[in-house]
Amino acid sequence: MTTSEEQSQGREQERTRVHVFRDDALGDLDAVGLAAAIRRGEVSPAEVARDAAARVRDADARLDAVQVHLDVPAPQGDGGGAFAGVPTLVKDNTDVAGLPTGHGSAAFVPRPARRHAAFTRQLLSTGVTVLGKTRLPEFGFSPTTEFEEGPPVRNPWNTGHSAGGSSGGSAALVAAGAVPVAHANDGGGSIRIPAACCGLVGLKPTRGRTVPNAQGRQLPIDIVVDGLVSRTVRDSAAFLAAAELHHRNPKLPALGLVEGPADRRLRIGLLVDSPNGARTDDATRAAVTETARRLERLGHTVTSVELAVDPRFTEDFLTYWGLLSFLIGATGRTMGAEFDRHRMDGLSRGLRATYVANWRRTPGVLRRLRRTREAYAAAFRGLDVILSPVLAHTTPPLGHLSPSVPYATLIERILAYVAFTPVNNVVGTPSISLPAASTTADGLPVGVMFSGRPGAERTLLELAFELEADQPFPSLKDA
Image 1 (cartoon, rainbow, N blue to C red):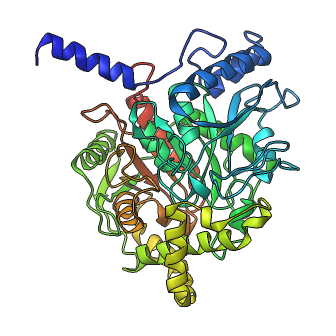
Image 2: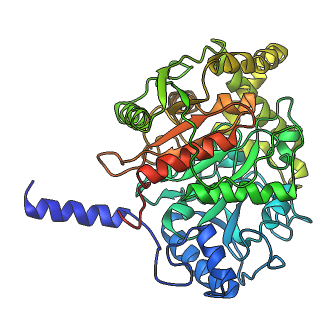
Image 3: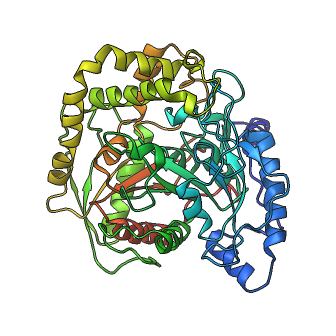
């Protein structure tokens, strides 16, 4: 490659990357560091809110990640909480009093919420300042945040690529440095997928670790759990510890604050090929196997493992996914009087049609999905953690998973991509997406996933701390 070609490529890469890290009240601090600076009086919550709001608007102009901006953000708590004064945003499928909740859909006109959702109250209990709401694909169904009408959410590592979904808006803003943490929730991978796409830490807690999600609580199998995406392991750990002060589930072991690696060496299972048969691409396979080698160097024992779920798991999960779309179509008027299910996007309509064609299978689908916990438990015999990819292939370009793609093609592409994450949602177990040590040849992050037994967030966080200390995660501010 000639010097002029190298310069041209460098300019193109610079043009397609977006970050808003700057020398202001936020600096490049994570949420824990920023909260400490506020407590020491080095910066005020008002300064931080002002500068974060400016960063969010700057990033949003290039990433299209925000659904609702608060015009005059101000500290909303009483000054207490582990994240007192830390700016954040709430995903737009969760109610914030006075703000509309649009669920990423053009099928209705949202009205302002009368009260906070239960998780919003839990999030605010940590002391955060909410700056607005982030965009998601329609009803959180898609692993990319794209729409039939309107711009997609863009990946700050390369604006021609997907930021993931369904918490794509939150992930794009955190990766770009607009805020240190942002709300995310996960019903099939929606915390972990955008974390993998955007080079973040994305911990899906055990079912019930955070307050029950209002939508998930109404389902025959509750697959949805709330959390956040962050740039550092300690932010994810500090959030869960702070959230536990607001809501402690007595059915789960107490978590407390996890502050670093443990001395204990783990028995780790390596799962490279997905339970649904989707092929793992070379870049993802390399990232996972290199992570396994790092773990062995650190003294852990790594052995291959199989996750022998029912061969019908993918088909069953797809039917259950369709049930969710069917239910939304049937009850949508609770969100807005003008709700029109015919205006739902192509993915939502296709999922609904899938369910209508297969609704008689519902009892068997539910029975088999519930039995997945048996296969999951069997895979963990003699193991502490399972290492796998988050996704079967690297972050796709925008358009590849657009809801405008014909449904038959689109669902085939989705199932070839989202091949690892749904099992944890069905079983209700914790798993965490971490950035691999290096990016792909074209500069995109790759996520690796660690899954644990029910209630094993401490083990996952301790291992994540160890990998982060061994080799810091790639960051856009250093790219």
